[in-house]
Image (cartoon, rainbow, N blue to C red; front, side, top):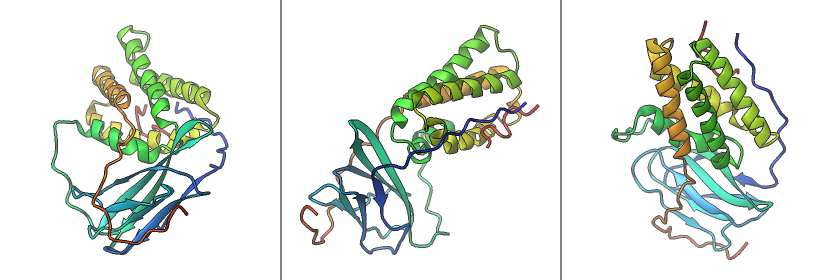
Amino acid sequence: MILFFLLFGANSAAQELVGPARTVPGTLATFEIVPTQEASWHVVTPGTESTPYQIDTGLSKLYFASSEQGRYTVIAGIVDEGRPKFLVKAVVNGDEGFKPTPPPPDSTSTLEAWIRTQTPLLVKGGDWIAESRLVADCFEQIVRRIDEKSIQTPQNTQAQLQIALVAALALASPTAVTDWMPFLTELSRQLENELGDKITDLEELKKTLQTVADAMKSLEIPKIVTNTPLQVDTPRRQVRPFRHLFSQ
């Protein structure tokens, strides 16, 4: 039987990351924190080219322009009540149907790479780094219980994993379960793709859950990269999760 995640009302954030959802290649776009607050900025690019951007002297705005079409992600790291939080905004530069050339494959597994890139984009809360350790612990807890034979079927694995995740995230914050819902829903699809017809093989399932745990523990806050400065004048200091997984 599929368990449903508990839903909690989300509190509106004190600050918002404001900027355009679509830009014209080569033209200047502005992203800013409202109300004004200093931030650390990072731009995730769709390809391999560096993204030219410039940060306002007050650190509350980012000026962005790129000739490379595709979907970009602007990330602003702020401090709210003494705790680090991340505000994220996706922006399409140019034609939405444009498909950039995918980066060359590396030695990292598809699942690990997906977790590293998508966790900061899909998890809505600002405490995703700390909460990702809790999520990793839940997956490792299930792996240990499979080894100990207290979990002996894929169906029980699903049920016990959902219980562990809900309990851990609900204790983390009132909104953590809701914040992680988009990520967990997409993760279930990735697990199905990874396992394929081995989805009912408990040993293969255990290995995949351990891969998820290891990837979650390796997550880091995106590093701020100094990119090519722009020549512009800047103002001065102004589900059901696991819907298909382990189907009976």
